[in-house]
Image (cartoon, rainbow, N blue to C red; front, side, top):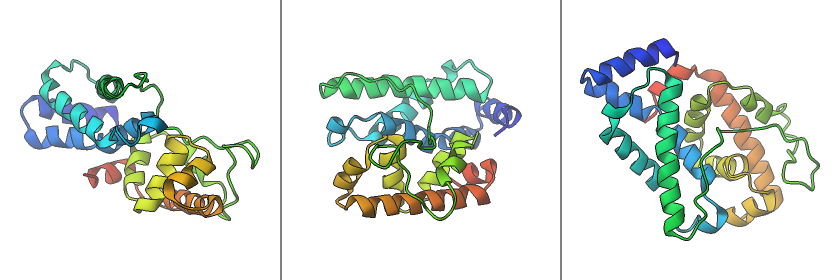
Amino acid sequence: MSDTSFHEMLNKARQGDVAARDLLFRQYRHYLEILARGQIERRLQAKVDASDIVQQTLMDAHRDFDRFGGQSEGEWRAWLKQMLRHNAGDEFRRYGGAGRQVQREISFQQPTSTESQPGWEPSAGVGTPSQFVARQEEDLLVADAIAQLSDDHREVILLRNVQKLPFEEVARQMGRSRPAVQMLWTRALSRLKEILSKESPWQSRRGSG
């Protein structure tokens, strides 16, 4: 979404347009889900639910909407991330975590290491899909595209690319062999590339919910 489109929607929401306000929040749900999921440490995964952190963040943002003084999408995103960071820290402290901060954007970097290291990317026969994803300037579009994947495809990308776990750990969590997980990951990236190729940022986000 351009800053102009965002500004128009923000103004409508501030003027009491309920539909505009709901859409403004809905468009960022998947983005916040990815951020929250990426910050949950392995030892806390069984206790901390990323969706709970996101739900609390959206509730807080709805409650404090009138306090948002920004005008740009970047300011809006930073405001939501700050709330998410605070809520994630509360959850981590509740379960004895270190209160790790939400700092990074969604990142799908092209692996350059060897097969024995966590960053190795097996050949997919479809080019390098993670390179395609890395070139996307619109991380909200990527988050919405991930939400459209099948459960297994979404999970393997979240574990591998968002939580940045080595394949051995991804395989353990998914109850599969490492080769099976690597093949699943390759297919998931290929499907993600296909979705991103077909949809414009506005079309993708407007249809998400």
